[in-house]
Image 1 (cartoon, rainbow, N blue to C red):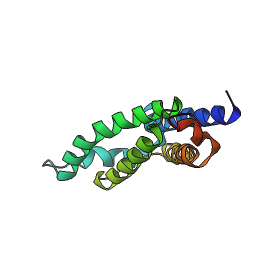
Image 2: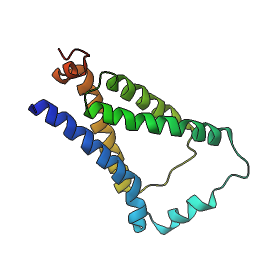
Image 3: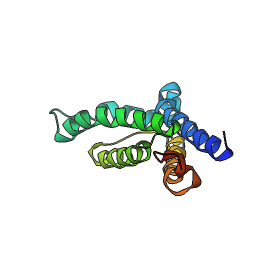
Length: 140
């Protein structure tokens, strides 16, 4: 395996690990969020089902599945993977306005930013680096 392939795959793995860390750190270490903020999240409830809730419920499953597929496809240098990763990322970003609010620790935020940077590097490399040739159908 060439160094650029190793770097590309390492970035994918690092992105996945930091995304997971961002998602679970506040559950593993609840004291990272001050007690006053911990009480805010459960106290804010909506009495009715909102349009935003329906959009999130309908969109999250296919976007989650396509994100998993794109990660695997990128790791295996499948020709369809860069496009799927880009479209899925745009779809995921488009869902953010439908999320009412989020309470996260600084650590979760840090891992989230690192994940975003790493994922951006993965997509950039897939399109604009010599690794792009690995995604061409005939492997040029």
